[in-house]
Image (cartoon, rainbow, N blue to C red; front, top):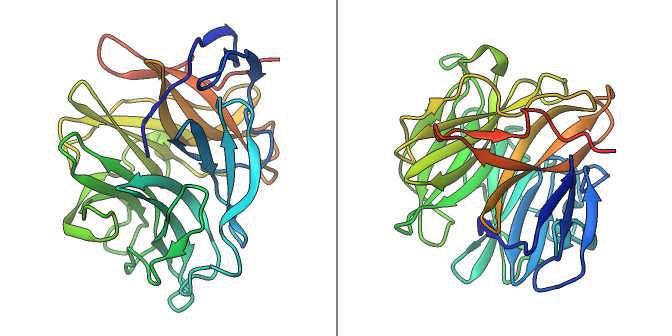
Length: 322
């Protein structure tokens, strides 16, 4: 994914309300959270050629709706999906979760989670397309299959050109605390190289029984690992952050969540960081009110950085604009 997203002449007017001219345009539009007021769990966003592409969890087919926007404000469902019954992965059944689109070379790769037909375990897959809107062709087998469930893949390319894949591995009898993992990728993004490393485990009280949903950014020579902790369908689900001077280990966590429940929005998590004209923002999902079996909507908030190098999101709560 291209991390840097251009948003010209942007100003904040009120909590959760933004005014934007869009990419290459001059018309100002206002919005407030949520930016997608429908079910949009685990949002992943790619900028390509002046258009933003968003995909999100669906669980069943058709999988991973493709939404587009020119300003991160007005999102349109294109009517396309990464997978339908016609091009679904031959190895996968359901549990189509946590997709992300990334440009790798001159192609686009959808990394995603799905349940294997034979083993019933969650695996990580990859599908390739000539354009971000598709059509996507799956590899034909999982990119990662393990003795435990693996999920929530995210792609990161370092300054030296080396690509990495990060993901979450479930707990096992020998490893009751399921880790976040990383491994080098081939230049085409379709093969794991070398050995995997663990980058984090759930060892903070607020994280509960698991951490998941990794996302990596590099800033001033440091690697920042954003992740979610807790149970996704509870109000205590939250976003955490850790940092290291290496992409493959040595991550030290900030003590408290960087984003947790507010009075309106509960269980914020699974965030994607983007940069808008020199400022950083995060797109993430959250539940509105107390109905945790309803829908997870997509919110947008500003990320700032303190003198100590740690990020902050608002006052640590989602925006609650009227």
